Image 1 (tube, rainbow, N blue to C red):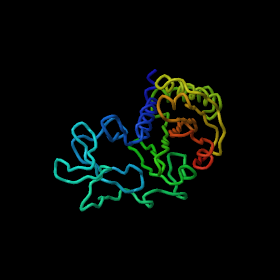
Image 2 (image 1 turned 120 degrees about the vertical axis):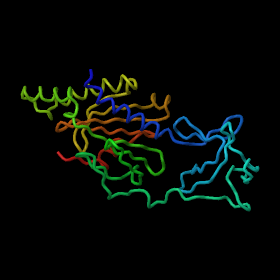
Image 3 (image 1 turned 60 degrees about the vertical axis):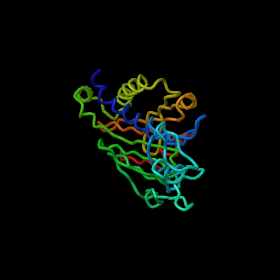
Image 4 (image 1 turned 90 degrees about the vertical axis):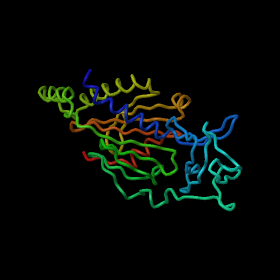
Length: 265
């Protein structure tokens, strides 16, 4: 169905969420250490500032043409690196501030996506948050362990979805009724699972912000991808809302939805 083309943007956002939460990190093999940028790339034949322990301070490392970090030596451009690979001057490791605590939004600062308001709390009490061009809100916890994407889409912006909404209205069916909720949710779930596989569970759950369809990817997905993933959808007032969570340990969805998410009914 062409009507699903618009909804597939969720799959795109989900891929962004996964790549963003694929966590840049140090890797080691029999040859040595190398830096995984988290998106399938790695530095090679150059210097790169890296905040490996996410303490807000980065050190500078040199990587050879094969991508391996040099250590306890002099680099091709005649700079010194210590036994940890960090650039030093007169024995002092050179550092660069990447982010301070003040760079993170804390509780009390709300972000709005349509009728949804997000308020940092709990696991997301300190975050880095950015709006993408499509209006979606991309959130990363300060420790990098959890990512969330919040988005909405006006269903009338797509011709086929608009036709479905208008047909329901002609039949006297309230868009906010459970019947319509179920129909749109099933369409969304069919598209999503065809792209990313069968989830561990699908349920209808009630939170402070209302009723949401909850798609859960648990231990099995984690064993293959290194992430726990939860997706929540709600269709309200001719708008689709979606919240996606990806965490390196089980996401506390109830806490996130009840403490961080507010909707206007």
